[in-house]
Length: 371
Image (cartoon, rainbow, N blue to C red; front, side, top):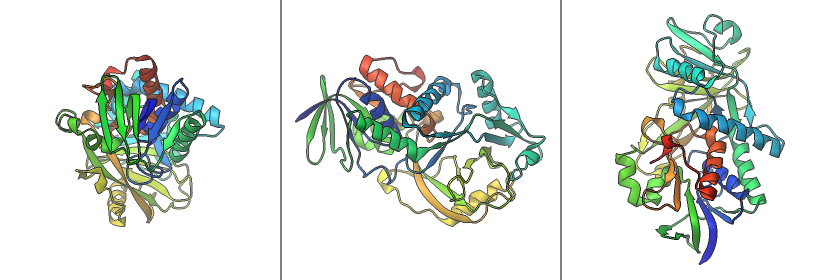
């Protein structure tokens, strides 16, 4: 049996950010990832994610958003490359809708600039228009993250700083003793002083003793989320990222064409529930993309062309869009860092730093994300 100081199970964006932060501290770090690199299923695949701070999900995320922006900037400095592209973001919805009200309240609470551009939206952004009774707010400091670049940076730096990253090494056994966590794989057994669990949609399967309470108390569910890329029409003018509360009540988001694949758009509203993360399939269809385009047509009458390609990812959701970052209820040497309810990627850098502080010094974790 091999002994290590800290184990990290799962090398999606949360596990990779944690591995990087932990590798900067004394002690050995060994990380386990079931796939070759997270390219199958999960929530960390792809090339882009939105970042924003006018946060309609709630004021509980304010401090974590702020610390994450600081951590992203520090990481950019280390790798000498951009991770965040500040292209701005439009918040669009009914003037009396919940999303705009919450985004406005968050911006005021956090001191984030959020400008009402309803009157001159069509002039500033040719691809967008507003139905009667709708408004648009522009968050200048928002944009998108180069998701694949960020994931690679965390992993590369963690390995360079001494962390051992074991890909294609699924954890088959996990148990806790008073002074150690026992981690089994097909070929070896490890004994860790502490263990960080960042497995996203596989959380309940890895910890079956928590499955009932996760689902009953925390309303844990895994959902299938379809993402599409649409042909970019000519002469669209400036095209920022966007979040829209649609007439149906669904939430949708989109990103500009920054890599020649087209405009990325998807529903943020939770998709179909999957009882088991292993049921993930790459079964995207143009029909679901057209359904989204039809709904977005009210605010983007000519922005989305023909669906070009698509992808399927997973959200691991908790009640009220919350996160779970806390010690196992019965084992104070297992730290749970999941779920992140489909909107955690932008805060991965801050979450990694939180994990490292909790592991090294038993620093307190945010009360809003505790069990």
